[in-house]
Image 1 (tube, rainbow, N blue to C red):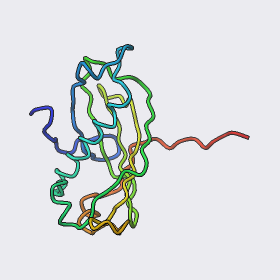
Image 2: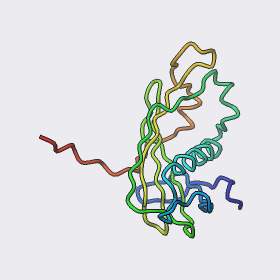
Image 3: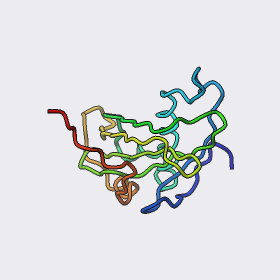
Image 4: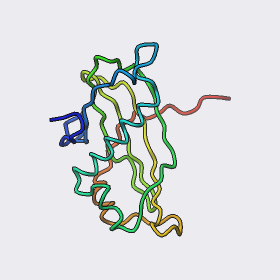
Length: 159
């Protein structure tokens, strides 16, 4: 298996999610010896592509749906770094399915430990440029079951 080939779902505590292994490249490592923050979302984007391929809806088929998606929001929480010699997985799961948008959770797992978590919110837009559009049933079916990867965040405790 090459670094770019998608893998099947792998077991994680609480269910099955898509996972893509990768090896950080030398130029992605910053002066502190860790993977620079901007590269995380690039690896998430590659893993999302594999997520949809394994669910029978590769991105190349999306024009048939009459829609595309825009990223409306992305969030990342780091707990531990990824270094050059690490061989982590990016985990992807469906966290929420709305009428015109959906959220995918992600987590970076290194040697069984979660180092980073986050989510990306995607909004469906019509291919003809008329604006947002409801999610097509084929996309909803491909998203599958909701399974969050992020721990519940504590409430804001500011006075």
